[in-house]
Length: 239
Length: 239
DNA sequence: AAGTGGTCTAGACCACAAG
DNA sequence: TTGTGGTCTAGACCACTTG
Image (cartoon, rainbow over all chains, first blue to last red; front, side):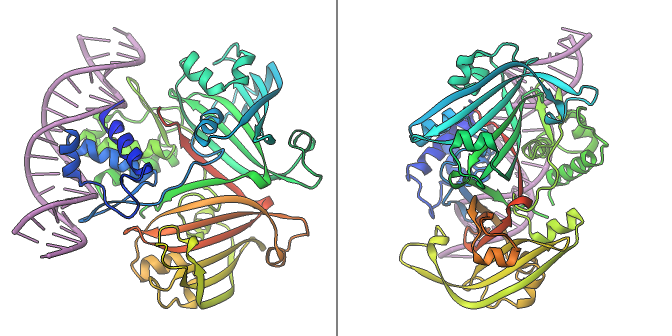
């Protein structure tokens, strides 16, 4: 990790542990330079990231004040894998793979920037139910491009797709676009999530891309309405 | 505006207008220095912002590639006022104020960082229905702290609260935390949005704060389920 | 080897807040 | 006036991609 990231982590942890409490000020930029032995711009990068993520608010002439920030967000927002999230949240979870099919053809409209000449692309399709504290709350349907991941072990789906992509294959996951909508539950939802007729689900569809800007995974995540929650921190864009 | 922001805007517009097309590369950082007459770090700030907002992906050794990015997001995400959004989207909208009450007491749990000694705070309460293409789609309930905005003209609610706060009062809106959930429609929802019994609404609750880190507005926004859509661009956090 | 982005530095000058 | 953050610069060195 670079210096700015190390300082970011250090400050973030100290905020999380109330070493720096909401409403108080962090050390000034000048002090941070001396504390960590860095140049000012390096420290400023760490502070800018903290501001971006809702930990501090910078006030000119005064300093960087710690603000109340969002808690962990379950289970969408950012790109964090289900397994990583479950570990942070300290909940008992289970991960049931109820569908696993290779060499499926997926319409490429799913992958927005793949080129128009193709109409379908071969993928591996994985269907999973996420069981949280004994209750099935989420269906995840993943479609992974065969051209990027030729052979997906079923064990990877039972553990964590992200861990497999990153740690085993060495893929560098860079970004994702997501869309959240509310839709009536379909038969599959009702069966897997044990819902009543007339129930609604929150649907999160996302396309995930690698560091070289290749989209490689399409995910449809369907959540029980009563368990769905999305938290966001947003800064006002200057005109 | 500073140089980095000017260059960000210029590049962003050129991407939006397909001067730089998805899949192609922007000029290199060295070239941007010469094109705009700036130092490299200044250009890099503009590029970092473009990457953050999903316009480009930077690839070491190669350059900054333009990626497909999200369209306008309706009607949450970021902090954009309803009026600003409606103008961008080019839709006919109407804004009906059906509730306006001053000197209301609001529990301060709403405003997370106000201090525990208080239990309620005086606010002005505004209720509005957003009518889009002739159809009532959204209820907005705003609660604005009287200590920050002592006297809110009803006309401001009929036009745009944000425009009033920023342009008339000179308040600097800095950031907001939001939470999205799905909830059964209540009587008020059914009446104002003309919903059937058993319908669901998407609820967005947010606290908005000023540049000096003071929270001053709590908003509850209730959306017709079938019209609700939230788009997000997220980058993977490095471990 | 040449070109690209990634990181870091030391210093300058400015704008704002507080005393 | 002093201390704070905001902006910008010119240059250094490194890591990666391509030929």
